[in-house]
Length: 314
Image 1 (tube, rainbow, N blue to C red):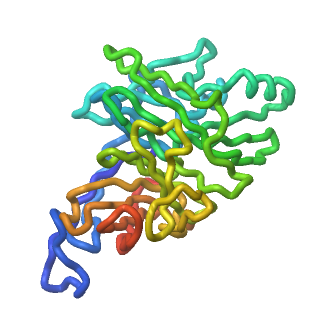
Image 2 (cartoon, one colour):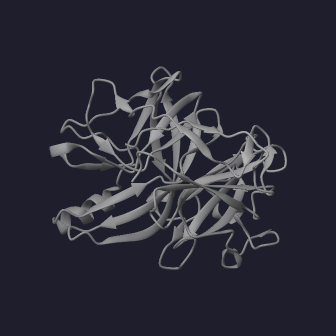
Image 3 (cartoon, rainbow, N blue to C red):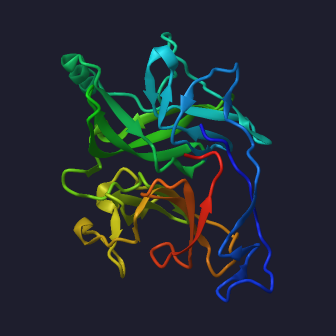
């Protein structure tokens, strides 16, 4: 897991380009003047399992991390594992809450009986992977949702994206923060890759007032949808940004961002009231640089000026 980094953004000087301006607490465009690696996210007991593609979230006043794959050494690979942060003053102090008897970390989202039967029939080392790249959003205390990608990875390395499913994630043990995920619609998909539908919610997801907003990709083009936060399971309540308004036709969805592989979109006061929406992510180039964008509305108009080189990332 890459080390976490802290950034100190520069103050404005007389030598700033004309387009630089003070916005909130920082200068635009941003520039990193110091990087301080904080270390690695550990597991209590020093369990040395490496992980990839981590993302933080909050449920029921606790902070968590969810990961892509966890490499359990000789025990194999587990996808979509999670850790709870033990001490909010030390974000590196985290622990797994569920371990399997065989030494693997237990996944948050589990396979259905049908999926397990299919893998037993193939019996060649293939696996299903459920990756919560868009994170988990909380719609009421202790209740969250994740729009996860479903991949079938064959023994020869072939990776087929099937689409996006939805899971309800609940805090079931308030004492230690243990979570339980229920796959909605019996594990059936919400959005389908073979229909060239955007993978809504698997790029980024956030709650703002009474709606949940979902960003999803077709290749590296990003699209936007929303639904009332009490209607996450009801596809009929989903509407799609067509460039002018939200409507019910998914085929009218308009691209709002281009050329990005992963990222998070969220509200922040970092750049002031003029640009309350912030994007932090990476392009599809794999160049070890973080992109920062700002916008006055969530739907469109992101300005990308930040291209920050990050030490410790590959």
